Length: 219
Image (cartoon, rainbow, N blue to C red; front, side):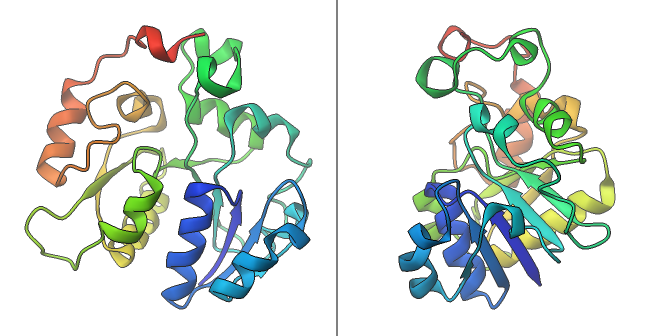
């Protein structure tokens, strides 16, 4: 499968490593240009590209950049993606730690709904609550007791099924976490965030989540 990754930080870099190792055709881009990704490309066999080309022909596009940088992506950055492409948003809103104040999110819009509005394309929220290193060393074969599970939120059941299948290939269970407006249940400060739970634990944690953003995660 052709997969485009926009962002080559901790999550983007390790997704590049895992997905390329699984045999996917991976293109990866960052804001500083493909020349800065030569080492990652050499290590993984992925193709380093300009951000404007990351989605070209891709069946899945992963957007994994700081929330504050989403509005700065080039206009039409997803235009070259394959018809019906699934766009995964891995992002989190860190107002005090990184992103500054984003008014719409502070006023109650879920992080990924805001990202969706910036991109002009439906998104599926996934990979936002796992530590990057755990993508490399916490995966396990299907059926393994205690296999780590990740929540997957989005409005399109078919798109969520694509993401859940990708998670399974990567060695994780996927848990349908509802529509995108329910994705606050997996944002920072919720019980599921960073918890490395199995599927039953993820469902329980999602159910326990409070919609009120805690003080650490507000501007």
